[in-house]
Image (cartoon, rainbow, N blue to C red; front, side, top):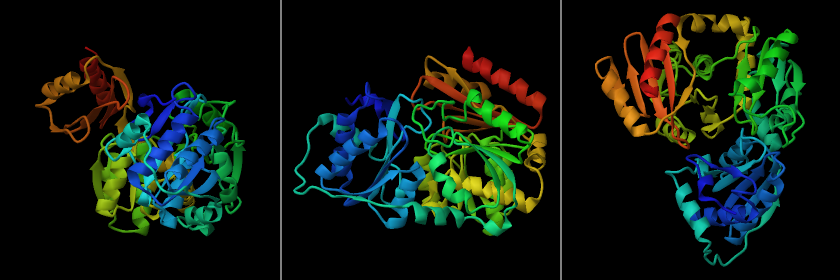
Length: 447
C-alpha cells in the first residue's frame, strides 16, 4: 500500500498499514535510489512496532536498485543525519513517524551532506517513481552492513559543551517511551547531573502519553514531575528525539523562541560575530538577543529544508525554530535534540542561576501568543484579506505566509502544509496589547 498523500512537505508519514506498508516502503527505497543514484547510504529506525519490518522493506528496495547500505539499527533520527554527514555517505533514511501517534509510520530522507529531501527537493519525484512501480535495471544488487555509529555520535554531541563546567543539576527527563530513552544513557553516564529518568523504555505503543510535547496534555507529566522533584530543569523529548522541550524550575514551559534566544547568546560567546538563523514566527527576543550579543540575525522561512539550505549559504553557526528544532553547523547543519539539552545544562551551570531567573527578562519584555490554528475555507483569500486590512499599519512581508511588523506589535500568519488552516503567531510589547491585537487578528481570520 502506498497512498500518495503520505508524501508531505518535509517527509513521508502515514497510517500503517492502511496508507503505507512494507510494499510501499520497498517501492520508496527503490525509487529513492533510482532518483538520486547514491552508492552508499545509512538507514536506521525508531521504536515503533512496525519499524523493523518497514526498515527491512526499504532496504530491500534500495539494495535492489544498487545501493550499499550501512544498517544503523535502532537509532534516533539525528544519528542518521550524523552518520551521513560524518561518514561522507551519499544519503540516508530514518524510518520514523517522529511525534505522531502509535498507528503511524514514516521516513525522513536525506541526500549527501544530510540535506533533506522534501517536496521541492526531490520527494515528489520519488513519489512519482514509487507509485509508477517501474524499476530500472541497476545491474547489481547492493549490500547491507551493520554499522555501530554510537561511539562517534556520543563523542560528537559531547564536544559541543565543556563537561567540566556542568554542575550537579537535578534534571527530570521525559523520554515518552521514544528514542531518547535509548540515546541518552551513554551521554548521561558522562555527565555529573542528577537525572530523574522517566519513560526511558522505548515502546512503540506509547503506554504513558503520545511523544509530542507541543501538545499541552503531553506536557502535564513533565511539569508536575519537575515541580514534585524540586528539579532545576525538566526536559521532554519527542518520539524520534530530534527535538527537546524545556520546563523551568517553576514548572513553566519554555517557548522555542525563548530557548533559541538563550542558545544564540551562548553560541555567540563561543563564536563572536557568528550568523544565526531564526524563523518568521519567532519573538523579537531572538533577533534582539542576537544583535545585542554581536551576532548577525537572519530571518528565514519555516521548515528544516529551508533552514538547512540557508545555513550552508550563510555559513551560520546555529539556527532555531519556534517548533523546537535546533540546528548546528558542527552537526552537519542538522537538527538535534541531544545537543540543545547539553547546551542548556552548560548554560545554566555557567550562569549559576535558576532557569526561571534567566528567562525573567524575556518574559517581562516579550508577550507572545504561541501558535493559534484556525481552519479556513480559502487560505489564499484569507491571506489577502489580512494584507488589505493591515496594509497601512506596518511593514508587510511575504517571506512565509504574511508577516506584519508595526511599532510595538507584529504577527505572522502562514498556511499549514497539510491542512486547510492558517497558523497565527503574534507578539506585542505588553500583555494587554498582545491580547487586544490577538483577538482583533483572529476576528479577521475567523470572519
